[in-house]
Image 1 (tube, one colour):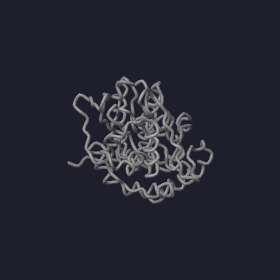
Image 2 (cartoon, one colour):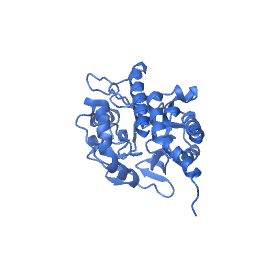
Image 3 (cartoon, helix red, strand yellow):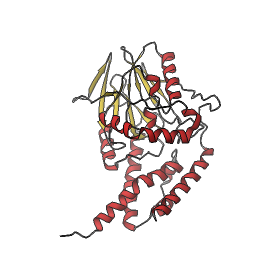
Image 4 (spheres, one colour):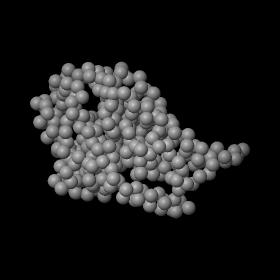
Length: 327
């Protein structure tokens, strides 16, 4: 039965990927393998480099992430390095064109591949991540490389994992200072086992990583839904004027956090109900989904993955509750 379910999931995912031709045109130039990266100033000295709000495809070069960089007066802090060596090199060149400050260090917000596979372009500077993120990258990097090469082909040529090389533990008071900049740095969890959030206190710009998805279905290979919801409560208390999610539009109205919470609550409630009813995975994939979520980017592919990643846990939980207690 499990093999049949996997076949159904794989088939639906293949059809969904084929249907992405109608999505918004990517900004990348696939013929030249040029990501056409642009730095958009969010505040003095704070820039975001926006990726496509989509799923990984050869057309976008697997560039679906928002990276960023901040001039601190004592060098540039880079926030994530993108999905490939080529992206990292183009990001490094963009930073040099944008600010005279040299790159001082790189910060990785979690263990997912588009947060660190551009690191080869930053081999000469410290690359910071939490111990949990560093361990996760070591554990999973080979699989990430294989998957992205499969998905995006020539864009990935020459890409080999260069892992973060320094541990970063947020200070007890959350304050982290580089040059003239004071940041609030939080380690939360739920999207992964370690999700860093960086708030620039001067500008109010918050880089919130994968905890917030804006107008896009969340990715869930490492998700723990209840912990994620708790982290969103923590995020809501931050004095953020501008939110930079890793995926989806930058925004200032809190809509990304609200939408992510609403999706996770719906998913948790629905998966629980469907597991109690005894629905199998292929039936869950055909069950109704609110139009709001169906309209989000990457729904056709990412929701299939949500079901594959998370629904078996709900089935197990129901079976464990139903199992007789042995004395």
